[in-house]
Image 1 (cartoon, one colour):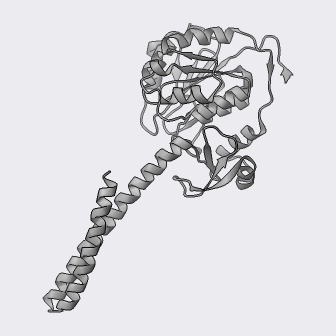
Image 2 (tube, helix red, strand yellow):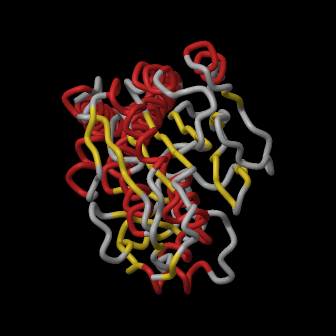
Image 3 (tube, rainbow, N blue to C red):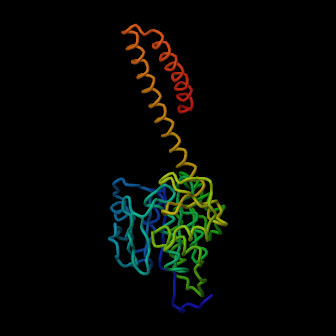
Length: 330
């Protein structure tokens, strides 16, 4: 470990939330003091949908909130919110917006923000994970802890959707598990404490981050170093997924940069399977209709044997369509 200047403090707070996180976010910013000494970056799972989150946060608390432009410098007492369909990253002392591959089937996603902040600012970072489904943000909190930062999680019993904070509590050595109403006060106290030292950034973390933002010189070689090829393909691009070594819970990446926790991969595969089943059902229905029309055409020219043969094939397809309909509707 290398020593840091005596005056160094934690001055970057990164916050992630998903379903049920709006109320905790509003409570959190309402409790922060004017002139707060840290920069605040927020990812809320909004996909490509329009968002008025900066306006809501600005009205609720004393600190201004906005969608930043890429390259804007971090600023104490200002809240930067990830815009729709863009990852929000920290690069040195500035923010970067990107449309890099989705992670955990989301863009913006929480893990890219947390991971980039950990690499850029090490022990100066405090990560906060709020209500949500699945486990986006868990690997990011692990990265923050590995780089000397702190991790705060909303108490699962206080969360509308407890899965995300509960998973974090099970897989991360969190520093505090708090109701949303108490998080602002805890952050204020944490930013006032000086930092003594910083650990080196793990090489595997740097390599994975470079891969996720398209800056790896050889993506396949990088994946071979940090992972093991699996027999599973990426739901986004159909490329091979590598299972990241020693990741708990298990995580996967493809060479184009898509990343998944095992829970997010299960959800994405489920959606892909559902789509494939309904597409196959549509094709079977269309095939049956065409065969019935062919049989009718054979009858019009008195080719009864041909009509019976084609009708038998249509009956066979109708049986398979019925079975597939039952499977797709479960």
